[in-house]
Every structure is written in C-alpha cells, then in structure tokens.
Length: 121
Image 1 (cartoon, rainbow, N blue to C red):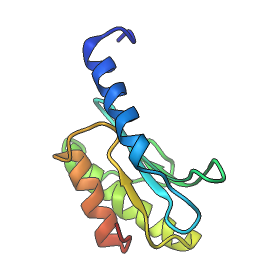
Image 2: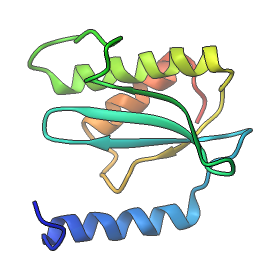
Image 3: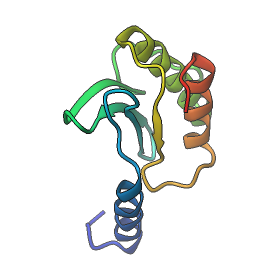
C-alpha cells in the first residue's frame, strides 16, 4: 500500500494524535503495538532514552505459535511472552499505546495476555 492510501493516512493521523498524549519513561515505559495482516508486533519503549527495552512478535525465534490459524490466540501468546521478558528486564508498569488501532480483537488479546503475564497498565 502506498502512503497516500486513505486508510494509511487516517491511521498515521491517529498515531500522531495518540503520541501527543502518551509517552514512556524509565519508570513507566510505553508498550507499542503494530499489526499486519499475518503478524503482530509489540515493543516496550523508553521514550526519554530513545531505547527499545523489550520486543516480541509472532516472527521472533523464541516464539512458538499457540494456534496456526487463530491470530487472536497468537496475539495473546505474544502478550504473555512479552510480559515474561519485561519482568526479566525489570519492567512492571507500562503505558499502553494501541498504535492507532481500535482496542478490539488482536490488540485487546495482546493487552490481556500482557496483563495476565503480570504487566500493569
């Protein structure tokens, strides 16, 4: 898709609007979500230092698929693994950045998995 696609432009506009309000710091970093048609990606970012602390996705080597055809279950699995990695990195509280997507489906499943894994939003 080109950047001139109306859906892409609308999502980019939502991302900018959200990022005005949400920032992560060393005490409470930002959990950012990106999803494509096949995969879902999540990172925990310290915006004050400009560093990614932890990341997890369905394409990472440490990831094992929960279900081959259920993208929502896979997103929840990514959330659980991300929370586990965050705990080992010393991160307990995060600010959730949904990345311009509606809090529904895969985005919601990822956040619920992260909460079940022990992250606090």
